[in-house]
Length: 234
Ligand SMILES: C[S@@+](CC[C@H](N)C(=O)[O-])C[C@H]1O[C@@H](n2cnc3c(N)ncnc32)[C@H](O)[C@@H]1O
Image 1 (tube, rainbow, N blue to C red):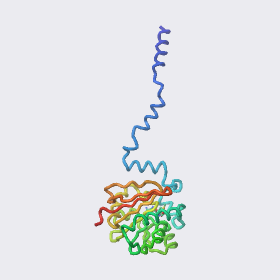
Image 2: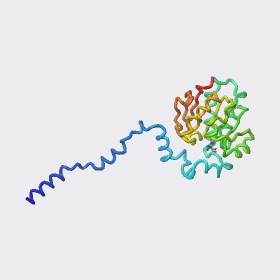
Image 3: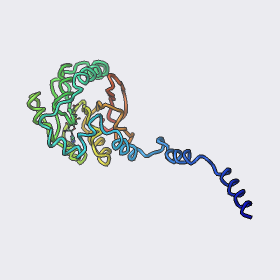
Image 4: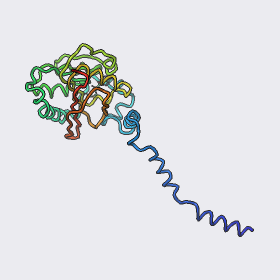
């Protein structure tokens, strides 16, 4: 009887699947990345990879970081950034604006004026900055006019009366809270013909409902640039 039980147990052991590890790994793939909703996907990405190398700095929150460091902000990638934005302007703008001198540009989340300087270098005279945290650094460096609207305020319509030809947002739009993105982008699409998003990665993802249609795209020196045209502004 005992011998028979042992024999049974031995058989059982032999028949046990030896793939516990595979099973665990399979769990990871229960939800393929392709079907993760965009909102969740972006939140995940922020958790895992941070935002363009600033992960540690943003530990206590983006707003806190820029409240503390806004006056002294500079972009460590500025040289490459200026070159790549200038390249976009040279490639994409002449067929849209034969002369750039008369166009109006808003540098949204302007930092200390990195993107503004690129537009100025191509002859744009009317550039306005906008940043609730770095406006002083922007003013000190560029001597250009500057607004202080936050992403949230813009989403709520604070720029309602303004009109621009191009809004450039460099290394910043992915920092807007996901819950604000839709209203923010729609507000921007009602005040500007073009939106140039410059980013160290492919984020933020833009949806059709945001009011912007992708026209041009370029990745150079690991800097992603996308030019959108407004579908809301006639
Ligand atoms: C990485 S910096 C980019 C600055 C500059 N555009 C550049 O290319 O270097 C992000 C910018 O987003 C701004 N910012 C952060 N949170 C913001 C918010 N809630 N509303 C508006 N701007 C914000 C910061 O003040 C900062 O200037």
